Image (cartoon, rainbow, N blue to C red; front, top):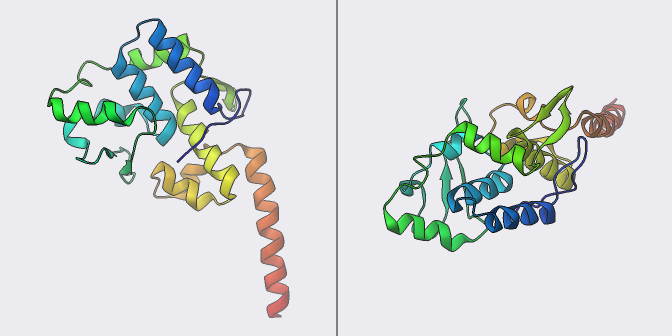
Length: 189
């Protein structure tokens, strides 16, 4: 399961912060569909378009959610960690609770509850992409393997994933990789 890290410039949003924000939303009577959608975005690193495309048919009998991603990405299949029973209930109801969601509603909720990352893409702030960036950085930090982060986001190319991993983390890993590669080349000679 993915975890979340601390909130600040170019740093991931931690799990406790996310849980606190989700509880705050619930206390303020934010719609449950929106709350669960945002929780799934932070867990999976999916795009808003993946959430908007969800239907009860994308939830399996054992509670897995199939996120069909755009831009040629591979689908993600995961078990929601935040209240998994809600997803099963959604499946069995047959009613599509995601039909009324739209990009601006999700965007406003991210902004209203400060689920954003300042200056995370150069001079741009990550709003809804903060969930995607958090997931990529979390996996990359834990594994130091850009390929695993690539698979987590469902990307076909590593260069797409590099966009979501902070440049200083990539630079450190690339230096380590170059040292290993040069050592291997030296041994072969």
